[in-house]
Amino acid sequence: MDKLWAGARPELEALVGTNNYVTWLAPLSLRAIEGGAADISCPTRFLSDWVSRHYSRPIIDALSRQGAAVERVSFTVATGRPATAIPAAASPAPSAQAARARAPQRDDEMSAPLDARYTFDNFVVGKPNELAHAAARRVAEGGPVTFNPLFLYGGVGLGKTHLMHAIACERRARDPEARVLYLSAEQFMYRFVQALRERTVMDFKEMFRTVDLLMVDDVQFIAGKESTQEEFFHTFNALVDQGKQIIISADRAPGEIKDLEDRIKSRLSCGLIVDLHPTDYELRLSILQSKTDQFRQTYPGLQLGQGVLEFLAHRITSNVRVLEGALQRLFAFASLMGREIDLDMTQECLADILRASDRKVSVEEIQRKVAEHYNIRLSDLVGPKRVRTLARPRQIAMYLAKQMTSRSLPEIGRRFGGRDHTTIMHGVRKIEELCAEDHGLAEDVQLLRRALEA
Ligand code: ADP
Ligand code: MG
Image (tube, rainbow, N blue to C red; front, side, top):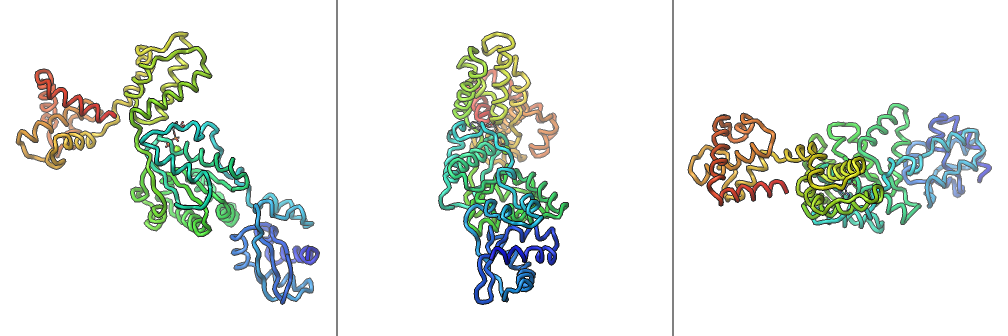
């Protein structure tokens, strides 16, 4: 059989062209010929589908010219790792070298590099992320695919990428044979466009359709990019059909991603959707503690008071990346100054970060919180009615909007049903006055502010 196949190879190459031969036919071998059917061994199912649809005829012709009685072709997908099953070394054809180079690349070469620090061990679990963490752990264990895809979403810096790297790392450690492919949606698009340009789309398809675990990070990136979406959709379906696990992340839920095709949204929604909630105080504090332990290894001897960590956990609420950056800067600063890190120094050193993270609340959030607190409707809070029970909460919301956001008075006015900026100014002054004399109201305002900062 080997000899027959070796003779047919150059025929095939002549029939289909070197490019197609190298891409599609070089990885095949002939197992047997029985009852007029040539049984071809093929490293992957995708490859066999493609070859049977497009190259059955040339295979029959090439074998016939070698004197074999062949009318049909059947395919057997060789078990085992596709890349090693490619008989490139056994092939005497001059294009063997090319075949190896052009054959689907190994996952570890195609996969985006993984950050070694992003492991499960280094991931601090708390209420806001425990579900996402549990789902990630489950998928990393391998085993039967129970939810497909796993869709992780949440705001920036909440640990989506960290979890995905951790899954990849764990899965590869548990099963070195598993083909694990991690990349961002942007890289997916870039590779796709490159494949179009270099006319290697079939390689591209082959590569993506033969992985065991595909992870695409920040999928919102392909919104509005039609042909990339199309390709992604097909890849996605092909893998789901084969029962291969897919993990997707995005900055929002599938249904909320604008300019993403409906069929993709609904496909993305049919597995398990888990969101990473914004961090709470406890989670931030434990993340800070764990990172502090790590930094101490780089800066031994540097002290950081517990008060400092609590202060940071209170004040830097935006995302974990900012929190990490703040801590890093504190340690670097302290080591340069040769001083212990106290609260004063923290405030001085992080003034810009602290200012920036004070401005993250939106006017709409403030309005919602205030309406909820006073048990009134949002539409009434911003509406025209002037009764006391509505007017006071409205003024409190105006005051907080001025204090907690960087919006100008006219901008705030627009968000309060198109009120004039003088009305907003009046409201703000009124609450300032009242806070000075009405202890209960001052406490209410403080409470709301803290709730909004959390
Ligand atoms: P995202 O991809 O959601 O924008 P990342 O995964 O890049 O966020 O996380 C930002 C940074 O915060 C990373 O350095 C990551 O290690 C860290 N981080 C996020 N969540 C946690 C956590 N729960 N425990 C430890 N580090 C975390
Ligand atoms: Mg990310």
